Amino acid sequence: MCKRIFANQTSEQGDVPFFKIGTIGGTPDAYISRDLFEEYKAKYNYPRKGEVMISCAGTVGKTIVFDGEDAYFQDSNIVWLSNPKQLYLNSFLNYVLSRVNWNKLNSTTITRIYNDNLRELVINYPSVKEQEKIVALLSLLDQRISIQNKVIEDYKILKSTLCEHYYIIEGREFHNLGEIIEQVSSRNKGRHITNVLSVSNRFGFIEQKEQFEDRAVASDDTSNYKIVEINDFAYNPARINVGSIARLKSMSKGIVSPMYICFRALESLHPEYLEYFFNTNRFQIELKKRLEGSVRQCLSYEGLCNISIPLPSLKEQEIIVDHIGSIVKKIEVENQILALLQAQKSFLLQKLFI
Image (cartoon, rainbow, N blue to C red; front, side, top):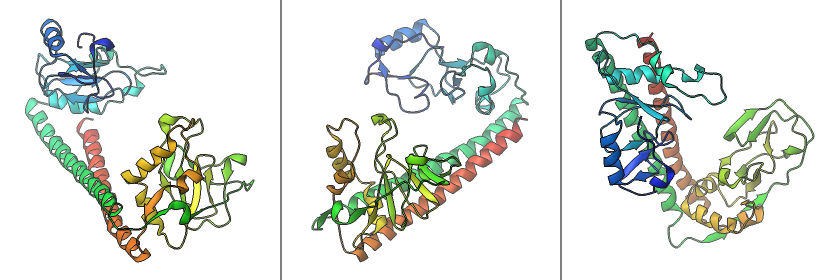
């Protein structure tokens, strides 16, 4: 493992990225100076290009193959395995380690991979030639998964771009949301509600068996509802995700209060047109204005009503919704393809390394 780096030796910007367990394999959020890097690299342990690195704390078992680029790594939490005998390819080892269930290592509250866990790990491996074939196959699948992720990301960018375009066109008449929505007066039904939206499931309904009593609210008419998450139970600003949208479609559904503002769109407003508006920068900017100075960082219904939205004719709203909606459906299809590719990789990892 690398020589220990202390917090006062890092900065948000710098010459050499410093990776921690939360950023390894991704984007660094800390850096060290070039002088410190060169000194520690010369004096202490440092990985060789191609060696497998593994996270040993937090999210344990995350592996990467070191690409040789200048970088430094968090001591003891990120280690690498030297491979002097070359009985197996490092790339082969990377796939083997990626399917180990490290959570079964110890019974402590926080799972950690210790040196002995790695030393005692038994690995069955074929000839190097056979390893090369296995790695070639899995690498092709990884490349296809990477391409698929890029396709999905491009569609998401397209969707975001379209949303921004349609809601900034000059010359459109603006209305405050309070003019085109109305709040649903929800009340406690005092009955068993089987499906409830909760903080753990922002975009769908989860089965709930228990009685919610005064925490559950519902209304007689649930057609055309929009639900906006405003805060969590503890009013923790770090977990706020204002603008999460869901749809309440039947009386067997309920919402958990006070997490949500519940309202319906009036006849002049297409509900999906409003839903896409919540994904725009315009809405987020307006939202921040209304949360400034709020102790609980909680959006009220009155605050929501004062946010303005460009409002074309209902027919034009439908065209916009169809256009953006077609991209949303495409993203759903591409996500299904990605899930199939990931399932195929998981199957092959299981079968190849029995």
